[in-house]
Length: 634
Image (cartoon, rainbow, N blue to C red):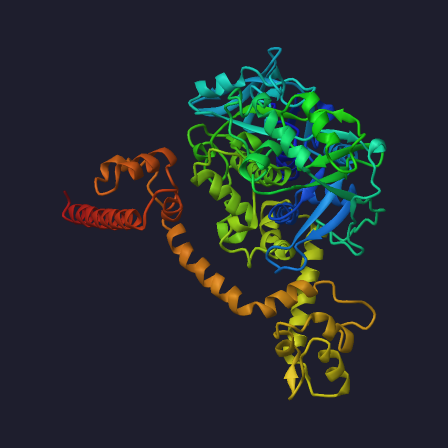
């Protein structure tokens, strides 16, 4: 083979897949249509947010790159939902888009076992229904043992501004033409999705005088669990709002929108709606928040977050000028919508390898998701499993209970979405267990097992675990008695100490923060304890956490029951016709996955359990009869 693994696409999914495969020792090729846009942030130059920060930290915990790159190139770091519970708190970085892309490319270029090459894939080469290579646009053939397709929005991509359209994967870049036809020829079914991006504004023409300033955190958290912690000067963002004039302009021009005129047939992301969708779907709201977010330290372009649109350029300008602070603003780049082909992910298993084409993996928007973090999460899983597949090793499948990555993959391969999937904390039934602060505790051992976590990171992890265990033991064994100092400290939180208690018992009180213990009885007199939030959350929410762990154990009973490969569910007449059709289409791997398919009822699961038990009995009976025949000499 020319390469063990070929990764197609240099976006966030492709970067993580190539990094994983190369770091695991596989000879890897990263193919990109344009090497100058490797690691590009074509939409909002930001990482994180609710649900998404969990994914970014989980990718980092496995040994990925998105967290390190975000920490190295941030303009601003801010924790969202800081006043709410720990399960929904989320870190968000406004990134320097040029520096982020440059950092990713520099990193990949210096990675052993990885080659970067500019080229466009025209078709896949199969031998015995296994991936054997790829053919490029100018006829070059590359032999490989596995392919990871991370084509983003480029498959038959078309961008729209008003009723004007042109072929493009994104503005200024060629689409991948012809590959969709090849994929259909391999037996894949395909769909059509849509996404979009807001206009960019010349920051020098914005009047910030009366706009709300949104600053970063004074003592920010970071995405990576490594100990580098770069300190950069933070840049403020600003908030503006739509006005009655904005809404009137949009309503008056809905017929010019390709989405509302029926010219675009792809389905857009429900949880990241265009400004047109906001005005129509939330007609009762008088105003919507929009954020002015700088795109970098070396550019004056400002991203108008929340104003995604595909209306004509002239209408976009009118909308911009209707916003407070932007009355005289200049538009640098027009907003647009992009429509593209994708592969419904139910055609793939939990390793992100296609069920019917061995060695063919996919990740990112090509599988029907939206967002950099979702793409990175799929990319690292696909890259790991492509490397394991080529090496003939057992694949890595993360259960839902382990991570948001596991939840994401399970949702994609189990549920027929029909719209771009976006990660949110509400997607997980175990979100108190799957917090962003404990991602390393949950996933770094997985990364170590497959070879992505090096000795340096592993030593950091072990040291952290030891330090946390010592602190837990100290809190559980140290008793305090009522005195003046404790009375004064606890009085600020309407608490009092009537008798001797352990520090753990004190911290279990909802109103008492760890900072009280840090002030009066610290673990180290010279520095604050760096993992206080994890310790405090585990103690305060111990009852809820144990309840979720019990739910996990119950769910794992179903997930541990494998369903026969190639099973024909149409023969199970006690299932409804709809259920039989869905099971045959999705072909779940376990009973637990079957139970999570939309439309599959508890009664259907019972039918499957009865069938599996009858099959086990039949197999035991057949084995007994076979053994008896062997003993009798027949």
